Every structure is written in C-alpha cells, then in structure tokens.
Amino acid sequence: MVAILSSIFAADVYDTREDQLRARFVYALIATIMVLSITIGPIGVDQGLIFSPILPVGVFILGIVVYGLVRLKLLAIASWLLVVASIGFIIANNIGDGSVGNLTIVLSIFVLVMSGFLLRVWGLTVVAIGGLFQLLLFPIVQESSTEFLDRVPVAVAYLAITALVYAYTRFIEASRLTGQDIESVERLKLAEVTAQVTQQASTRQSLNVALNNTLKLILDNYPTIYHTQVFLIDDKGIQAKLQASTGDVGQTLLAREHSLAVGSLSVIGQTTFTGEAVVAISGDKDSVHRINELLPETSLEAAFPLRVEDDIIGALDLQSKVLTDLSENDRLTFQSIANSLSLAIDSIRQFEDAKMRLEENQRLAEQTRTALREVERLNQRLIGRAWADYVDGVGDNLGFTVNFEADETSPYSDWTPTLADAISTKNLVQANHVIAIPLRVRGQVIGAMEFELNENQDFTPEDLEFVSEVSERFGLAVENTRLVEESQRTAQRETLINQITSNFQSSQTVEATLAEAARSLNEVLNTDKVKIRLGLPESAKNGHHDGNGKDV
Image (cartoon, rainbow, N blue to C red):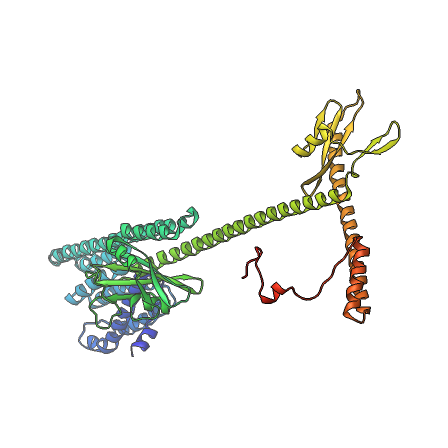
C-alpha cells in the first residue's frame, strides 16, 4: 500500500528536500480538497454553505490540474494556481451567497498559512489582499457602516495572523539560510581537510607521518570524535593491522601490534571485508562493536573503507563519546576524508617503492662498478704478468732505436730517464726536446716510446693528442700480436704432446713404453739423462710421509 501511494504521489523527481516537502504538502492538500469536494460538497450545497454546485466540481478539476503540474516538476506554477484558485473560489462563493461567514474566515486563514508555506512573501501578499477584500468588500457594497465596523476587528486579527505567518515564513527562510551557511562552512572545512590530506602525498612524507597528521586533522576539526586510528590490510589480505592511532591509548595498541582479522565480527573486520562503511552503537546487542578495555567510554564507532580502485587496503576508524548515530552528511564527509587518505597512502607507497627500487638499482650498479674495477684490476695484473713472462722469455730483444736521418734501426736495451719517467708516472713526459709516452694495454703499462725533436721543432697540443691515441692503438696491436704468438705456441705444444702420446700407444710392452717416453722427452727437453722408475720404495710401502719425512 505504501509503495502504491509513493508511486502515485511521487516527490523524488525534485532535487532538494525542501521542494520534495512542498510537493508532498501540495499532494496532501489536493487529495484532501478532492475528497471533501466529493463527500462534503453536495451537503454544503444542500445546506446553503456553498453557493453553487459548480464550485465542488471546479475544486475537483483544480485538484487534477494541480496534481498534473506537480508531477511535471512545475511546483511553483501548481502552488500559485492552488493558492489563487482557492482564494478565488472563496470570493466567488461569498459574492454568490452575499455574505461572509465564519467558515469563509477559517478557510481564508487556512489559505493564508498555505500560501506562506508554498509561496512565502509574494503568495502571502496576494492572499492577504484577497482576504481583506472578502472581509471589507460586502459592507462597503451594502453601504452598511455598522457591519463595516464589526468587520474591522476581524480584519485587524486577519492582518495580525498575516504578520505572524510572515514572521514565521521569514524565520523559516532565515533558518534555511543559516543551514546553508552551516553546510557551506562544513563543505569548506571538508575541502580544506581533504586538500591537506591529499597534499601530504606531494610533500614526500613517510607513511606514518602522513597517517598521524590526518588523524590529528580529524580530531582538530571534528570535536565529537575523540579517538581515531587507521588499519591497513597486510600483504596476505588476512589481517587488518593497526598502522596509526592517537593518544596514549593508541601508542599502547601500536606497541601490542593490535590487529583484527578481515571479515571478523568487528567494525574493522566487516568494513575491510565488505568495503562498506559500518557504524556501530556501543551496548547494542546486534552491534558488531567490540568493546576495547582501553576505550571504555566509546558510545559510537564508525569505520570507513580505504579503497584504491577496486581494492580495499584498510579502514579509517572513528570513535565518539557523545554521538549515538551519524547523519548522512557526516557519513559522506568522513568517507570523503577516507577517500582522500586512500589516494595519499597509494601515492606514498608508490613513491616509497620507487625509492626502494632506485636505491636497489644504485646498490646493484655500485656492486657492478666494483666488480668491473676488480675485473679490470685482475686483467691488468694478468696482462702485466703475461708481458713480464713474455719479456723474460725473449730477453732484451724488445727495444729498438730508429734513426731516420741515417736510416738505421738497431736493438736498444737501455732505459733513458724519460722512458723510465713515462713508465713510472704512467703519463706523457717532456724534457727539453725529448718526449716519452707510456704504452698501455687495458690500463696496464707494458712499455714506453720516446721521440727526439729538432731544436726548432715543437709539439702542438694536437700533435700530443695524436701521439697519445697512436700509443693506445700501438699497445692494442702488440697485445694482439703477443696473443697470436701465445696461441701458436700453445698449438705447437698440443701438437707435440699429441705426437708423444701417439708414440706411447704404438709400444707393445711397458718397457718399450718407458723407453719411448724417455727418448721423446729427451728430444723435446734436450736433457743429458732421463730416468723413469715404476713401483714404490720400501718406505712408501710401510706408510706415507708428510713433507718433513714423518709418518702421517
């Protein structure tokens, strides 16, 4: 039945609660007028209270028209039509009847109040003029001064009621404006709070600092809340762990590592499970509020989900000593703060993750650089050792002097001071008309070369740069040559070993194998004698010895 009436007298098409209330008031008026016109209208015509039977029919038609206008969202037109038509019907009835009775005065007062509610000052002015017209017109038309004087107190009373209705209308308007001012202040406060909460993500604060600042903002701006805290769901999605809390109680709970299971019978458990705000009253047997011995004064606990896209990451928990419920505006306000906090948490987490990845990358890069330096150092040592062995192997035949004036090339094994300085300093050395530059292979100095200039000859910076580059290329070239020679020697050694091994395999007896081994080694090593003995000495048969001749 309620659903049917709500469908017939629908007021949800209007945006504001004030318009919805006026629409319902108009629905109630026209329903009452139409019912009265059908039921009481004929009786009023029979008893002479209504001048003409056309009036009830007109009232019924008026109700249908006004109903249609209200349904079409033309509430202002419907209200004016209802008020003007009502006062018009009353005046028409009075003119037709030739008198103004008590019923007319009562109806006029009712229409006066109705106009003040629906149309405020303008409607009230129109109805007041119409009412005075009814009260004072007939004595003037009938030229009855006595009746006119009798109507004056009624007119004064009518004006007094008009003044009261006007004052009440102004009071309602002032209350509405005050409510709008309060709502504007609340919206401004909410905007400031959410802006400060969101701005924390750009100040590169840590997560705990941002959460604590947000909780302090809530306490400072909403005095009905006395304890606030934030729970964040762990990586497994099983527990909602307390991340930030206010006051000494909050520090105690944090020290306990307080947490609640997602989906548990608690405000936090239900909010983090369903993703919906939960408001619970302490002491209500059907409430999911779990009494905390550290917060015994809580009368209301409300939790609002922290959401990032479709994922629930935690909950904002608010507790009050004085509230027993939250209005719809309060719920929207705190959910808006929770949404802003969710964005801040997500931004801070992304920044901290990026910072950790950057630090990890820097650590890995430093490890790589250290490893490369170590590899480079080892390469230099190996190259230095390889060249030292190579020089020892070839003797003093790796130095040459080229005299271009005499077109002579001769071996040179001494070290001039400039050559020695170039190798020791690992830098270009210039003394008088002599320039020496070190030869490097992958950073390792393997030698040096020296230039003697004419007395009138100078090296320009471009010449020095050219010589440096040539020395680097020369170092690589001789290194490649050394590696080729080493590869050739290794190949020759492998060939010789394979040849000796094949000779071993051609022998038919052990004695023949020993003899072939001695002969082959003698050819390779050019020794005077080769001794090979199979078996073990007597001392080795009884036990083995350590390096000092002692049994182990």
